[in-house]
Image 1 (cartoon, rainbow over the protein chains, first blue to last red):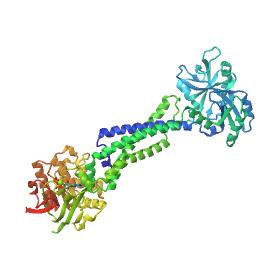
Image 2: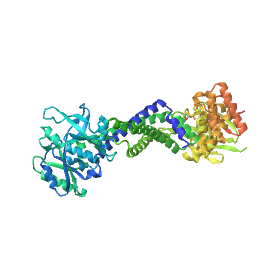
Image 3: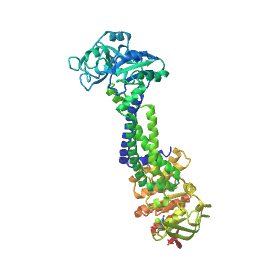
Image 4: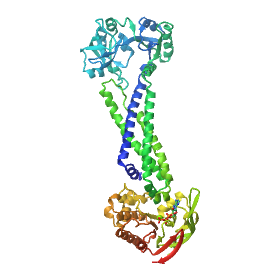
Length: 388
Length: 228
Ligand SMILES: Nc1ncnc2c1ncn2[C@@H]1O[C@H](COP(=O)(O)OP(=O)(O)OP(=O)(O)O)[C@@H](O)[C@H]1O
Ligand SMILES: [Mg+2]
């Protein structure tokens, strides 16, 4: 610790170079923080105790293929099934096609399968009783300034009505509150509309169902139930695939992108570049300090101390930039999520990301400092003093 | 007074690739405690090499070097470093101060290797700076000081841990006449009033006059000449 001022002085011997290097370290760790938040958010999707009790049944072919509505009654007969509901994409947008809203047409009992959703009994009843009624998430309502009683015009990006245009009108009859604010940002950002209204208004759906959601009585029986459900439609023209919600979300996300791989490769490339860049900085820094290091050794500083000082210098450099970068990410990510009004559901930079980040900083710092530190340690005093 | 440094039959061979160059051949020399010795000689005669051996920066290829009763030619790198920290102060031609540190912090450097507390280090450094007449410049960086002042800071750094021996390689080589005189006056004072034993390499006969003895080195062999 009493060497700290020496290390600090060495670090800022060339201010411009150090600051430029710091900027790239800051950028790298800002990126790391943001991408890791995205990765965490993808991994967390569908991971909950309630989610484990739910099975999703969709077409085996693709998630946009529909299923016959008659299947519902058959699924309800499978032993171990407690409750079945169904839904379809609505693909709603408010006022502007860019204002996409997570919106599903759902059967009346849909809310019963999702204890995560908190809807008051009165509003639940209003939903059951109002053909054009919709339940909207708390965050979504805030985003557009909606309240119960509002009449809202929506466009569907998928389904036209019988007049042939895609304009739909709804009445807001209730607000969906999310019980778990952290995990549930998805629930309070969505809109649920009546299956009946949907099915009777669009000529396109023709009694088909997007997917079924099943609640099982026993989580441990989930696999068996899933197999039994798929067996119903085996060898038909609408074969199904039934998965736990968690697996379904994961495979659905995988169809979009293998986020782990993408994040991993981007960060790999970024950190590799960082390694070369700061390695070069440290090498230069030590090279031009040759005579100063020789003086330290002349005075009697042991080789080991010189080695540690250079290592400490490079770890300090990376830590300094890394903590600023990750700190920025910690501030920026929630701001981004808030600014998106619930569209982006990022969990923020958590303790795990910080721990991983700090470990990376120290490892990168040590790697970067290793060669220059060895060089400094092995420095021959007599040669260095003579400028050889 | 007794002998502080005893050099017996010392040789030094440098290997440049396959070629071996013997820079010092069988040097014998005894330096009294409290002496001020000037080493002169043509360029390449081995002055710096001999000085580095005396200061424990390098080890001889053959022969013995005893300083203060201790055989330093047999010490390993780590032991030599510890020995230097305790017994020797170094002054170089180009001052070799840390450019980022204030005069005060530069002088404190050797004390970082001791058990002294931060405030004691500060106090000792202040005393050393006062001794070289730069107590009013303690917060200046080397770049804000003249060559002569920088060399006096370097001398303060060399004496701050109170070593018995001062080893100076052309301490006035980069200074104008007046600054050189100041530095030499300072060295003389350290020798006479504070009892430091000084070995100084110089090209300048006037600088050599500051010493008690002058030794000449030629092609790696000592030729004793005048005594001041
Ligand atoms: N590490 C080394 N490797 C190879 N040769 C060396 C080494 N150190 C010194 N020499 C050679 O040894 C000889 C003596 O060098 P030294 O530096 O002791 O001379 P010097 O008397 O101090 O000269 P100057 O007055 O120019 O400083 C020179 O020929 C030099 O090239
Ligand atoms: Mg020399």
